[in-house]
Image 1: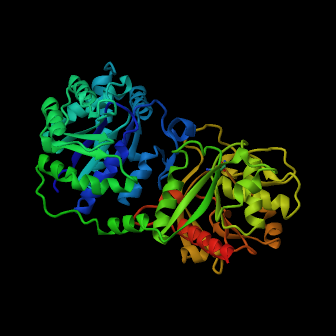
Image 2: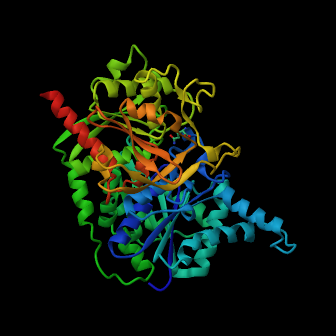
Image 3: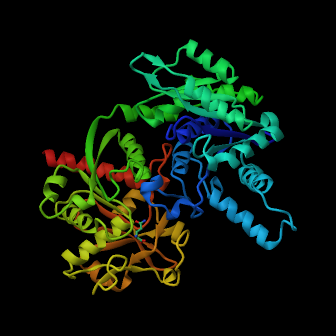
Length: 539
Ligand code: GLN
């Protein structure tokens, strides 16, 4: 296609309606028709990026290959489309203002008064068109965070208005709303959608397509009513009814002809139907498991649905790959102690200890790891989870009393995990960890070799602390193998235990790279090990 086309997704009525999933599903459909598509998220908050945010605020922080700390919706984009994202795919108000203020300080505005319109909106429009300008995409889908009517979203909606005006049919707006069902009257209500569209119109934006999230099907009369009040064709009123899994949504949107309606509106010739064969095969395996396993996810944010999003999604991909259902038991690390651990952990076929920061819940994680090691339960430790496995081994196998990470105890006599050399001089937070893709070399003949079946891998990182090589020889002698090393700085990236069927800790985050099209081998093999463990237990 000659020129990149821009599709915006805005939201109204309520937050958490799933703009990210609708955007990802549309991208999937367009890619399945042979187009090149990028998705981007604009977040209206003032933080430069979500890297400094507590998971209680916006859930997991997703990390890209180029080391950007981003919104978790970028994880959905990658999992649905299998297209890698980067810093350019997530922009916050903080980043926009920082760029404009930096320009002002450099004197770039030549004495002008710097204002929201045009300077902030120009910067927003520049960021939106940056991906398109690369020439790599036919469509750029831009999801606007928040809901219309929020004060902080206004400059974004204004930028959409300007782009629609400037680009005509190269620009299209999808508005996602809620059509609530009132049980008492047995009716679906369209008024909130009408109000939400009015709100958009007040900002000068006429949506082209309205996607209605609803728990019941929308009949033709309801569609006609929304179409009439909101100035769209009835065919452009798309239903998004609640489904069993988010991975059903692309098929649902195909059946509602979302992609077709959009292509027609943007005057793109319809060349072929989307090819979703592999996606349908994945869904079939997901929905027809031949058995199930129970895996414990030990972390301190388990009560938050989105805090470990990429990990829980990776288990869905890996479960489908094995055609097994993975039941995740979320276990709060603070609830694990000497008197509760047996009861909490004994029914598990595998234990995963999650990434994290800080002291809270550490001792519970260490007890869970000891249980996995001693009872030969398959174990995967990610980042902090790997570091805790090293601490546990140091304390309970090597007898290093009070061994710890200097992150939790700077005065430990045995700092088996210590701050990385390059991190010592950094005092600023935000984008300063060891972030993004780094290579790792795998030792042959190890368990991790069986997982990757190659010597050189690249995985994404987000940490400040590392295995302390001063202890390496003692750990190796006692049976903990450093089976993956970053050769540039001799950093232990992977550990495993010799006398255990499947005990692996990784300093990196495999969960960021698992997608529907390519489930991550570490999760696939971990689930395999859990299936095997369950079979042996049952004998
Ligand atoms: N807190 C640890 C570190 O900074 C682990 C980080 C993580 O789990 N992402 O090294």
